Length: 217
Image (cartoon, rainbow, N blue to C red; front, side):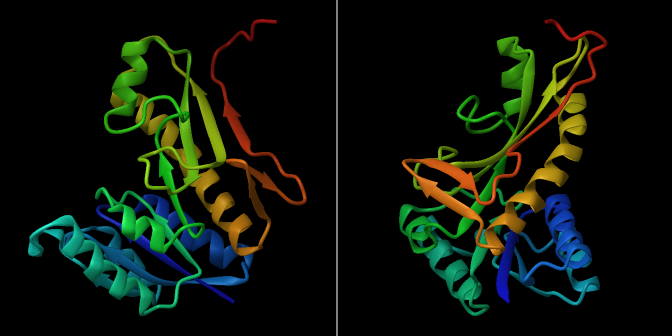
């Protein structure tokens, strides 16, 4: 039975999707704790309602990123995590923290990496005029938003889309691919070779949801 620790900063909708999938699909794992960087993170209430241990490590109480990360790691490690999941955790982590959890920390980023790392990805996609946008679950490495990709989801960019409408349409896809990636990890099905992630036995690592009326051949 593997222990999963999930880090959030806000509503934690991806956290909720993972918690529900873990229970309904009978993973060989449990969500041991949900830890927030803000005391007002709405996702804490859901986690507590599911009987999951919760904690807050308020980044505003620390003088620098190193001090915050040291405190955060101590709280995480108290739960003996096999996997740390970043689910809307809005903090940039120090290289030493990332290395401490190397190979056992996942993140979801709202773009088709390596395109549009960083913030405001939906706006970046619209400004670039791309026809496909999406989300990527990846292993966390010291280079921001550039770790090996586990699974991606793609949606078409529609006429009249705004950053808000694009984000809303993509969120359902995020709720499908993030639990899938976590399940593969706890089932020991992920292999990383030369920066590429393979699933054994093979399973689709791409979810495509198109709403365009016509598909060009």
